[in-house]
Image (cartoon, rainbow, N blue to C red; front, side, top):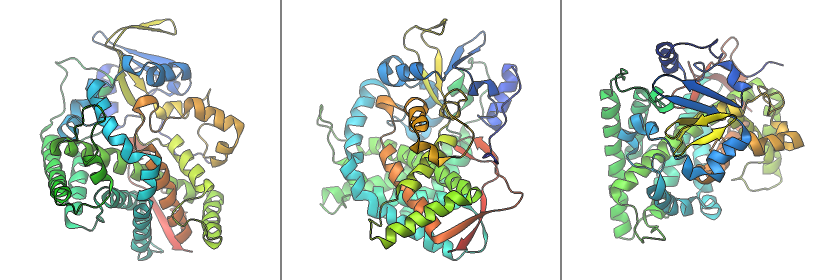
Length: 450
């Protein structure tokens, strides 16, 4: 069995300057391989201590049982604040709770169902776009990014990506991607003040430009809500939902913050997961044919054309296990804790790593293998309950998790129903983590019409 690509970890301990260099090249290969077996690891210098936690009961303590004791680290915002402002991704405490009270109703199960036709329309647009490239080798990450952005625009603002304003935002977001990783080294290890930072001028310029483009979309929607012509989409619902405790809605500036994180979390992460799912199916033709036959059988049986079947969902779920879009999450201890004989002091950084947890050798059977069938086994279901968190867990779980689990399998099913995916000989992608877990040089597949 050929295992899916996985970056090699660093060998042994390295000095801080060397770790910084490795980290800037790739978050994942900068980490030691022992993290795939460890329950907990400590990173200690004279200036700070950070702890990576894999032990399931401790992960649950941090995310579910005592989330207020381990708020999101302010250091995560060090590079992201210029774009995300005070969005739900960066906030804590009462401010975060207010934002979730406004946002969560828009992503309730019934509300997500109303967005499915827009997702299906984006999937069909992707199929139509790719038919003209049938037989060619296609850089599939770029196509997945286009499709995921189209979903965001259609469901959030009721316009396709071809809309002039939507395209301007998409182009601005790509410029920001090139300038800024989602995790800086300072997010994982609190560097001393004298440690040299990378120049931030390009990041701030790209963020300012993108926020201006988003503000134009928000301003237009404010006007349409006021004159009663606004469509009933996610933007309208979020902007007109008052906080149940204060009665206040988001201001336009606050809405810009939230739209920015919807793009970061809803577009970039969905695109990364979709691209890896298509690659995995190209490398595993038996599972690819199962997805294609499921889609054809559901269509012939007259089942809901806007819903993916269970095989497609299992394939996407397994992709998220192997290639979680956001590989690490950073919390900060707000009080002392005792874990595994170690005294974790207040202020320490606590790193949760879906990448290592979901490939942990003590928690998963054949952890590096692509096996969608594991989700139907008792062993796989048990591992999923204790060691699977591609969207986070507890109160801070991504509000769009349910949306993503409809969007990804649906687009995947439509594409595989239309095309046979073939790998390109000798062109094996190398996973790296910057903004999300992407392929270092892209993912190229040949698409053949079915």
